[in-house]
Length: 93
Image 1 (cartoon, rainbow, N blue to C red):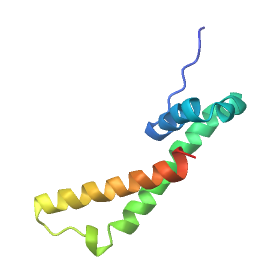
Image 2 (spheres, rainbow, N blue to C red):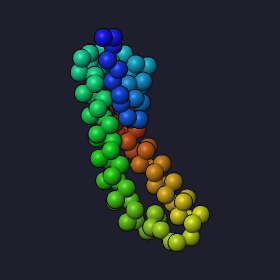
Image 3 (cartoon, helix red, strand yellow):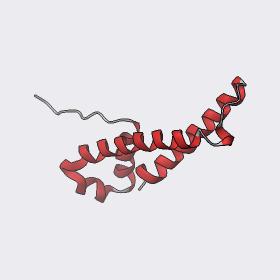
Image 4 (cartoon, rainbow, N blue to C red):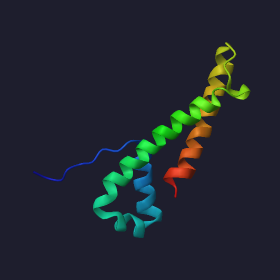
């Protein structure tokens, strides 16, 4: 039958690589719980993204103006801010 390959989202994979490279003891201690741990990271990241996006998009600094380039820049800044928060709170811990 071969090895079953688990599929993780972006943040689950980043967490797995981080654990392998920087926290090998935690990586190995998770053992058979690793798939659930990584899927939980993906779920939490998705929830955190949705929550932060809804909150930040209401702030004046990220509110759309109708000017395409300005709105794209604001959207990119907001996404980057959310990404940094997810990485520091969920992935690189």
